[in-house]
Image 1 (cartoon, rainbow over the protein chains, first blue to last red):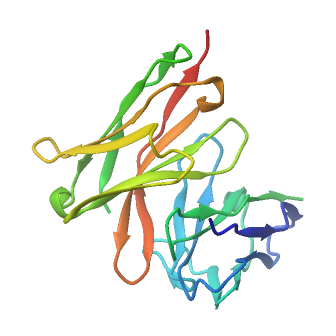
Image 2: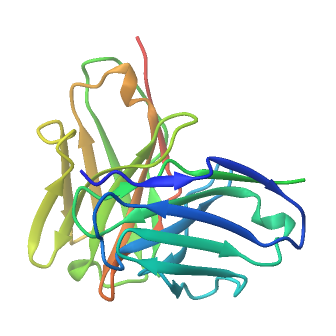
Image 3: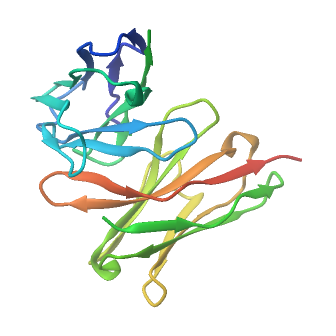
Length: 107
Length: 120
């Protein structure tokens, strides 16, 4: 299995801040990396697919970069509604695997 | 995107089985792919397996192979996931998700989740 490592596991930021979450794979997964947002009690919601493609309907303050082993999710201009846990997921090979999650809070 | 509606919460005894359903609407079910992902209380997401409907193929995470079965009924546009030999560690919310297998593989639609509680 490809174990995805996300960091940090939690972070606190202020409204309007720029926030960065990273995800690393132990081997190259090319661009088969997706990002999901999960709010408490809800199903995950796709934000970014194929490392950098913004899912339809997702605000443009969310962006993704990276390829190979290292990937980044950036939230520019953090909003109160962005409070959630964020997960990366590799879809390079089954079994698909997720990062352990990053819990984002507002200061 | 499609709408995925899952069956309701279940309480099961250890050693029993549970079958969760996921009814799809708004898509082309017969050529879609559906995965099952679970989330134990306070934990992260864990991919269990999937069914590719065209061609018909199932894949399972090694951890669940032999204990989880994913099926689908094209006539009702419903996917199913059955877990046998339940133990307390299987207590979790189980999600179905449609997988887009084009321009990268990703889950664009999710069901609302089904809580399965395993308790004696």
